[in-house]
Length: 487
Image (cartoon, rainbow, N blue to C red):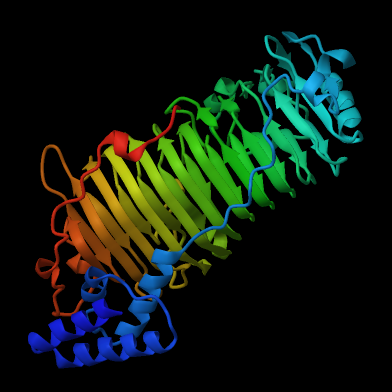
């Protein structure tokens, strides 16, 4: 609490008695509630600019909430080293797709063998659904449906490939390829590859009836580790209507010019953790959309691609809600966007409680961008006054180089402005020029070192007292500081 009273004294000494009293009252209240205070730098710099719609108490509380925002992670279920069904692990029941007639030559259709072996594995306690190494299995659109017996393991060590001709696709399932649903407590793991054979799909870039490669839907307590997903027809890995999902050591790749090939797409899901993922695609590396909350991303490599996105939300006047998202430690290289929140005009709902931290960028266009005027349409979108509300967004320890002059862009609605945008230790530059921050209807504040300046986030004349802090040097991150992964 001493830091709060030091901050109060500081403002008293410079003649700002109103702010001094506000800080002292807040500090006293927090002490009475036995809450933990902030550091001196936070106490000094979280002071707002005094606009009519905001007050010091609100920003103090919001900063505290964002800095302490933590997404709880449930413990991993046991991960096995293949082969684990012999001797020491003799209680596992092996269900090998080869035993059900799979050929594995990449030419013969192995779809029915996969269906039959799945039915056996799903109905057997402690089963291992095995796709063995060294083989290439051609599988058409297939639904792997639960619920299944307990402790099921899906061990993918070989390669699963999709038909490379859209005309050969199963007409009954135009939007899915490998779709797993209604599962609980299932572990997916292995060194295998899931290859969507998407090149001919990309030539007809319309989104209609393009399938997603791997989908986990309506499931809970799912763990996925070590898999590679590549060349998807559309999205590579979709997590839909799930709770408690952890993806780790996942590699996703498709060419930079492959359309609509999002890497990991999260929708209507809660308590999702992505860790040690390397993603390069023709669209968003990660996209988080409606009805998703408690999402944590750690140690992410992104590039090429369109960056790490929340949205799009609010299309066709729909409601979109995303809340409690944390990205901690990422490296983005030569992406068309960095950290992006995108919403359509006319929507409703909100994006709230988001923290991005410890992110390094290299030659990224639009490193930090909030866009409430997103319009992915060949024709101009209609101007509308309704919008998805965006508030309580924190960017901390973000550094690197921007390809665009506007390194930070907060393009927000005049009628539903962005609020409580917080910047701390930002160092974005341009190798061949200067950078700037653009703001429209966005309020917030920066503290510590912030480059380019974020003064446009507020309309008041009161200035931050950045020069009074010790944290005036730009944040310095090497690539090795940011990414600690073997990917």
